[in-house]
Amino acid sequence: MILPPSGANDHLILCPAFQSKWTNRQRVLVLCARGINHRDRHLMRDLRTLMPHHRAEPKMERWKTLQVINEMSEMKHCNKVMLFEGRRKQDLYMWLANVSVGPSVKFLVENIHTMGEMKLTGNCLRGSRPLLSFSEEFTKQPHLLLIKELMVQIFGVPNHHPKSQPFVDRVITFTYLDNRIWYRHFQILSEDGGLTEVGPRFVMNPIKIFSGSFGGDPIWENPIYQSPAKHRQMLRKAASEKYLQKTKKKVDRELNAPKDTHKLTPHGEIFKGDVEERVQEVLKQEKQRTKEEREREKIEKRQKLMKQRDEMRKLKLANAKKATKRRLPTKREKMQKERDESDAKVARNGAKKGAKVQKGGKKKFDGKKGVAL
Image (cartoon, rainbow, N blue to C red; front, side, top):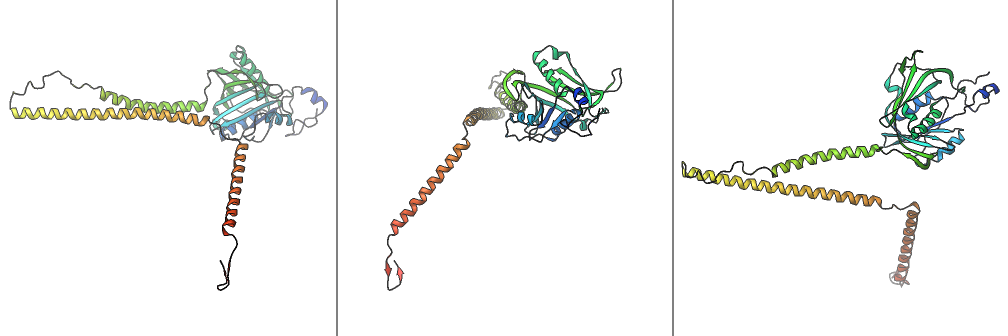
């Protein structure tokens, strides 16, 4: 049997004996959309090194539709696709799809740790075939059974692949816990089950399963899923509400404070001791009461202002939502508007020129001065 040289592609002509053994022709197209950060790019590179049956592709433009990937995979002779899609330079989404018929699964990738970050002691052979280990939960739920079959076909290296090595020295585990799939990669140290982690490690949160390849009807949807942007928005809102509640409690405490701690007759002790001193004390007490009433009035006004600000904020949010719902003009409408404006401008300039000619009329010549009047 003649093995191909190092770095040879799968489409090179091989000897008949080699072709008869390589029966499972699974090829995975691994690519990303433009906009992912450096950590996500390193994760994609680590997965490529662990999958010798992959095919690489440059970055895909974000304005292109996902249906273009089906054509790209056909050109590369791939029947499975792994697509990484970044949002806002901090969120990473991963698509796993079967190109020909479907289905396709969309995941949110969380808690990413690449090989370069972790610096673990494990070191497996490059191009070796892994053992895939799944937890018991993958056999109990129907959507997990479908995801398991798709992962087996994507992460499992075909036997007798030209770029693979005839050794099994690593294990990839998929554990279903907390409604998420936990990916771990280990090296087999000994036959008695000794393992050491190699990396990378990440968590896949399933969002939706579609019947087609990057499209079609949704078969299953995660009811517990919450987008990371929505989660960050809720955290910011909770932090702002905490401060507002503090100020409101302070104002309510001052408003509901008891006015009189003890029920005493205000003029009961006037005639004890010096009369003038007692009168001055009573006057001071009355002045203090007026001050307290003024402060309470100020606090009540402040509370009213806070309520008005809350109402104005709610109105602004409602108006902003209505404004975003308005339909934006299409490209064709913009071009039509520009054409109408240019036609109106040309018509205006023509009208001005005609008016100048009519106003000037024929010129008269002054013979003495030699100037046209």
